Image 1 (cartoon, one colour):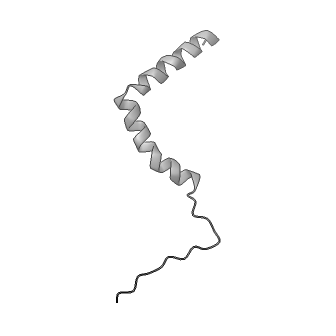
Image 2 (cartoon, rainbow, N blue to C red):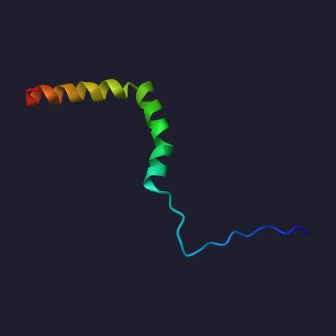
Image 3 (tube, rainbow, N blue to C red):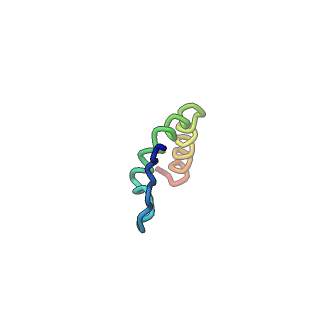
Length: 55
């Protein structure tokens, strides 16, 4: 009979550091924003706000 390894959980919860989570999500977010034109929309909004502020 084959023995299988049993993973024992410690008292510490398995959570990722926020920077690791950001690094994982950032490439997908950038790709999606380029594909759906999100960069253009952000630039348009930023220029509108800057115009309203008189800059």
